[in-house]
Length: 152
Image (tube, rainbow, N blue to C red; front, side, top):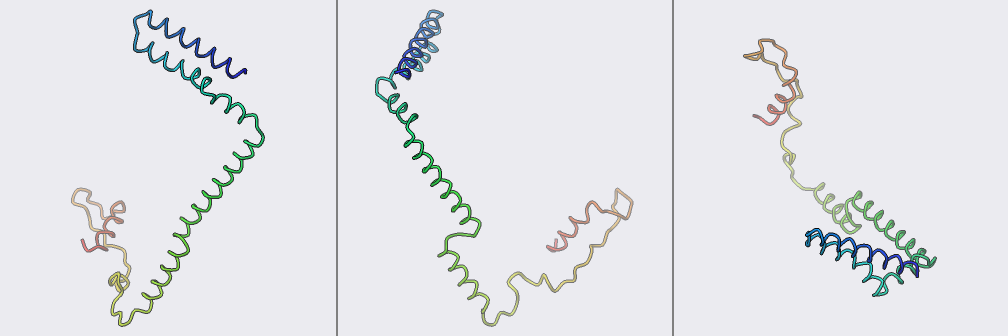
């Protein structure tokens, strides 16, 4: 009963503001305000406000919302764990089988990633810069190491 009265009062106030806005020759804004003002009145007339009021004050409805929230939390948690583990159980078993099959590959002559392990790890030689004149180029040593590693 109170919700219907409040919604009707909001609608009447909104329509009053729309009339004042139209009087000021702002018809587009007045039409928009009138549309917003008629929404609560339409909700009261369709019975949605009664349904919401019954739901808001029903302990059974709130218990249902709690159960839905718990179900959502369980779903989100299981999805997060599944993503962290790398897929479903079936996908993990298939990946384990393929890993075992690759580990027993016959006649593997060279590693698949190339001969990276055969080169000794050494610090790249620093050369004096044409503009700097000093022998130490600490700021570019990482870049030079990466370029030499890739053969550039």
